Length: 265
View (cartoon, rainbow, N blue to C red):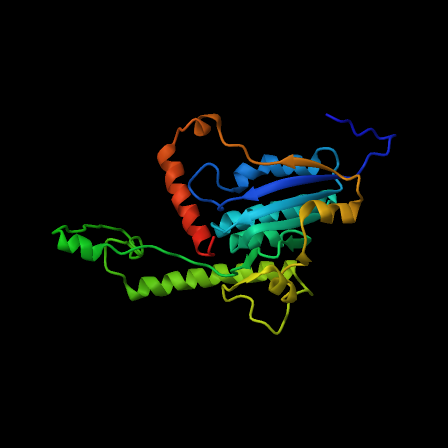
């Protein structure tokens, strides 16, 4: 490991953190604040980096985990005065864009998918199937809302209204985050918060990103040809790599695949 001695002028150092996959899904390989905390701490503190670059490829996921991870990135950046640059690969949509917006600048490939600034809740209804099979669902609660949106019972209008209210509040939090982080850059005449997605050049016109650019060329442009890179990323647990918790990882994989499929990927 190369030492960065105080009396010798070292070349610029950029820490690279890879944020790939769905956010807060069931599998251990998904992105979460707990899992990323040691990774981000090392990336921002080890070797006094000149910048942190985020490689982002995420279709989104949990709004809470997205917020926690984004807030941690901002705290470390502000505390240590280390600028953050996000580089989008296939997609930074929904929670993936939330993470990208935590950076000071966002760059993407020409074909990257960005946006989806909205909130979604999906499920299924199986009450008709149960009735056809002669099965009766029995639920007993203390509290009128404890069985809200039970998939094995008919959907209630009041439950849907309550859910839409919750989704609306989360959406407002998302909008506030984007407006705060992209202040003065967004196209004020465009409706950016409908859940629509765009490719990089249109996203640039709308002010959602700085432009088209890739990690190494952009970092060399900013910090010189001698810039060095040090990579950090999440590691899967040993037993998980050997195939333990197969069912949980399989379910998470299906959910993640479905999340990417929403964006044609």
